[in-house]
Amino acid sequence: MAKKQFKAESKRLLELMINSIYTNKEIFLRELISNASDALDKRHYLSLTDPDHKVAKKDLTITITRDKENRQLIIEDTGIGMSAEEMEKNLGTIARSGSAEFVAQMEKAAKNVDIIGQFGVGFYSAFMVAKKITVESRSALSDEGFCWGSSGQDGYTITPIEKEQIGTRITLDLKDDTDDEKYSDYLQEYKIRDLVKKYSDYVRYPINMEVLKSIPDPTDENETIDTPEMETLNSMIPLWKKNKSKIKDEEYNEFYKSKFADWEDPAKVIHYNIEGNISYTALMYIPAKAPSDFYYQTYESGLQLYTKGVFIMDKAKDLLPDHFRFVRGLVDSDDLNLNISREILQQDRQVKALAKSIEKKIQSALEDMLKNEREKYEKFFDEFGLNLKYGIYKDYGLHKDQLQDLLMFRSDKEGKYVTLKEYTENMKDDQKVIYYACGKSLEEINKLPALEKIHDKGYEVLCFLHDIDEFCVQMMRDYDGKQFQSITTADLDLDSEEEKKDREEKTEANKDMLSAMKDALGEAVKEVRISSRLKDDPVCVVAAEGPSLDMERYMANEQNAMFGKIKANKILEINPDHAIFGKLQEIYRDHPEQIGDYADVLFQQALLIQGLPIEDPVAYTKKITELMIRSN
Image (cartoon, rainbow, N blue to C red; front, top):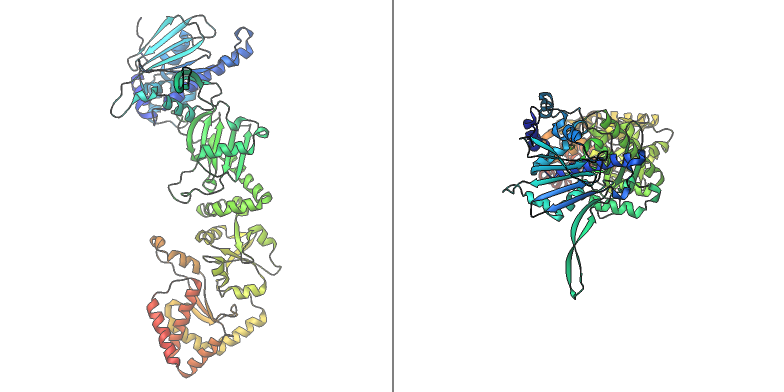
């Protein structure tokens, strides 16, 4: 029996496969089972098309045998089998070509070629764990059997054998254990169970293995006997391949909780099948609660990827946009190009088309929930709404049109959630902009002095309770042609002509006092002026053009110190109808040198009301004490 040599560069190719291509050795079992499943598919098709080769579906199986004594792992199938020529073609010529060009492709990790699909490289992953591989096979179209054997880079042999059963039997002589690798683990029942469950649970044919079962001892009712029994390790029919109409909610929920380690039922199930240029089945879930690390960098998003029911990848990030990264689930498609190890998606039009299709389905599901299950959607938004807002902000408004109608904000009227569409539909005829106010709570916002005039007008105000909210609407710029405007913006343009005239007259009458207060406050304010928005409060601070007050407050946070300090162009407004205004007039008339102290105290007070920090709290409290003593 003469040993044949692999073609040129095969040694280098095997070395690359064993040491470079696969990120973990356990992949080998997935590859061998996938090959066996393909062989069973081919024999099943032959049975359907050729009456001379009929075979019962129950006889199409995969069997795994663990021979601990000889350190052998055996994978056997009753599939189509191989002739000597097919062995030479499929096994004797690695990747169907030993050319330097192919090796170069391997070394460069070619990203635009489905190498596994074209060349059948997966079989050779078994050399990662085996020092010798023996393949015994008999083709369904032949009465002869053949044996292919190889210890790797030194070549292979093909010899005739007697083989009664059609199909293929692959025997792996496992490598010796080392300090770093315990290859004998692949002879343990628990290990094989785990690998089949992880990678091949949904292969459509039964994967059988002999296991030990404990049964009662017929001679002693208090004892048990371990007896060997053949068991099917895989579930074969995945939930997502079943008819939706026959799947109960409990089945969906239990699958989700067991698959994704969640203790709570999901908020929404998205299950559908697409046939077309790219065909796939998806089973996705919107969780009821955000994972504890969801808003941290440690959180990994992505969908599980299956091909023909074979598990390929746990977190396929390319299939899920960041703004929908809360979705958990899986996609099963036969149409995707994978890299040589079937572990990474190729970046091609198929992936982009699939990702776009998935995105549209998630979008549709959320819109449906918002329209028909409002209470459930509001609970969802409490958990994941920040992520939708971040999705608009992150891409500079690129996804505005897609996401804006999914956003919700609390209203200052009763604190209920409203969408932007609902807000604009309820706007008064004379209202030109969408008003918003920022704060840590609804209670804090409702105490803002700047709300008084807006409430008098009967306008609704959106409450921005999270830092991202204002960043989000700045990226959006407008909604349905309506601009967003903070209630702490300097010019709200809410005055009637009569009110404007009254303010101008009061400003002219007190211009010297206002100028003196501005001089006393220096660069801390751009202007001190008579207010038209205040009703009960004495003062407030608003922002002119440039950064808003809330942006300044956000940037003042220690965690944002890296961005540097951003200051709003502040304007101090004084209520001319408040008693404090008369007191200021009196002080400026009788003790003009003291007006600066009062201006400073009122300015610090306005900052505190707005939730902004004051630079020197100690000096502020001392000044209040001095003014109290002075007033006596």
